[in-house]
Image 1: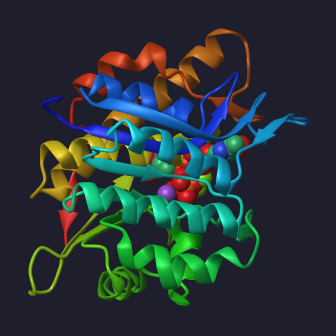
Image 2: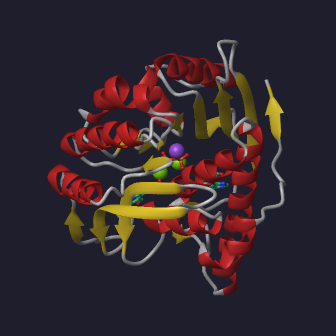
Length: 296
Ligand code: ATP
Ligand code: PLP
Ligand code: MG
Ligand code: NA
Ligand code: MG
């Protein structure tokens, strides 16, 4: 048994580059977790490149792996982490996995990044939205949507901070005690908005303003959710602290990424950057808090 926990992480794998499990597994290991990855897809590289190839795991194949673990009594997990899921059938199998893991450990924490799209663009089939709304959100312990995903899940347009808080309340009433809008562009500011419904009292809500770097990254959403899982396990009653640590370590990593690209003679604002994950291990293990939470 590990001190911190054992995470089952069902996410994409890319041979080269850092998205999905490639972006989540290493940081969680650095934070002391045993991490068991199931690769929902195996692609040559992420889908932002001009081309990609590879294989997609289907729901039956996922269930096969779970049964294999179960036959050896290896389904003792403290956390389940899921990211991009491309089909209704796979998502339904993930729901079966949640149920199965909770039958072994009723205290299982399910951290769900409800990946639907970004900046107004949907990148999953439309039918997934209602499955997330009706079946997935209700069983999640922590939800980490971005602005567009919150809008799709709640039907609320987020144009000001109050809209964001209201959307978090709607999501709490559907299930998860911890909701983090991982990025929202509101009145020209990049914000993370967090909401923790500890008790039956109104939730504790806060924001962190994130200095916007003029570059486009992939894998940062997946990394954010992994870091939030890691730090909120260390600080289970302090979501603000967990978010400050996650955001601060991410900012240090992104600054390093941009610096490294510049040093190599690239203009970081012109293409999607691969994050410098391995090189940033110190900032992941022991981040300095540079981004502070502000309570509402
Ligand atoms: P997901 O894609 O998982 O649904 P998301 O859209 O919030 O979530 P990102 O847009 O990658 O994912 O943002 C996640 C985090 O990455 C933000 O909270 C921020 O800390 C950091 N980040 C991403 N891009 C930038 C940027 N250009 N400048 C500063 N921080 C950034
Ligand atoms: N998974 C795969 C296979 C991808 O191609 C991408 C982005 O291109 C992602 C996940 C998303 O990464 P993130 O939302 O963390 O930027
Ligand atoms: Mg985004
Ligand atoms: Na997110
Ligand atoms: Mg994303």
